[in-house]
Length: 120
Length: 343
Image (cartoon, rainbow over all chains, first blue to last red; front, side):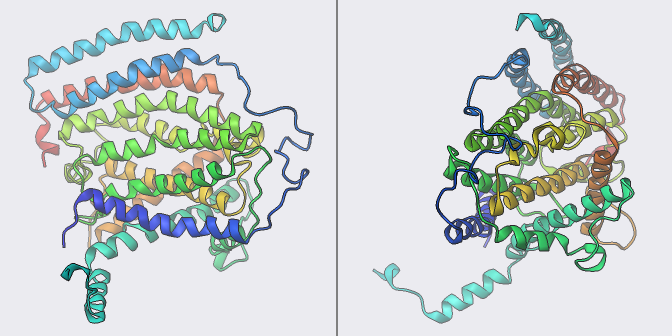
């Protein structure tokens, strides 16, 4: 009986699930229920809780997120090229090297902008 | 109607015997599979405590078993029976689901990694992409844990985890591009076979340096352990996890350390290849634990970096080194050295 690759992955994951899930289930079923305002307070170094945790935080690293969205796709394209590197002719490969060199210019400008913290 | 009739008990027994004695069952449950990752992760928690203790001139765990080697099992049993306390306003179901999800994600890449010639659970053609894809889901789950616990330390830890991914993900991808270019495949078994003459750590030394640094960030280990910075964020995103949920999260992190070391071994250190009469899996596990020990010693030796320094370094130094590595690789390939790593 030969199983294909993804069903083997599924079998493995089901095995992990079958081991991990009962731990959580029994921990929850057997454990003591009921609320205690002091015990259940979120940990804030022994202080009383100040407001919710789900509030707005400063996003001073926002430009890096934008760069990530832009250049992650480029990394994917480069990966497909790298896979075909040995089969594609050399002149076409040089085109991709030029593409990488061209890529450095917008990258450098984005880095220059993200370094200016007062913009963000 | 025949399909509705249950098979005879003898047939069920025969089927069970056939499944249990099959090679696939052994691979999934024992060696490259579940127990291997589980026990290695437990061993790594002990190794980490012991090595860090030696770095800090302490002794470390001592009493449970010879030099405390049974300490992880004692800890596991203790955590298993602890009460699960969730903070008020926390999303309890989400937290439990995420702890479970971390465990599933941490073990998933193990199926694609070859521990010996043909000793791999699922020999997939997209093994490298599969491993990266599964690994890149971690920060999202960690952010969900931070969101679900509705407590400030875990939430800050989750946000840091996400920013950290932004810093290391692209250089990490580009650093292995050299290997993909040289071998022309994403199959991890074929990548190991291409290293029979020369380990990729030598022609790909730049890529190795970038990948190792990015792997430290991916594993959230010092110097990049921002999401669980003990001295700033108590326990980071794990602060509000308790009992079995904490155990799953903790085990997942060490399983990830083991699998990442195995991936570094596979990609750069020749995988299972060794010399002498020692079997291939022994070589592989030995190399993996050496890599893991280096990662652990780094934790004892380096201070933590700041978030902005990590982001800046990831996008300037690491990314530029990874791009330079592509040019070095092209030069190597067109210089006619290709026969060295031809399969």
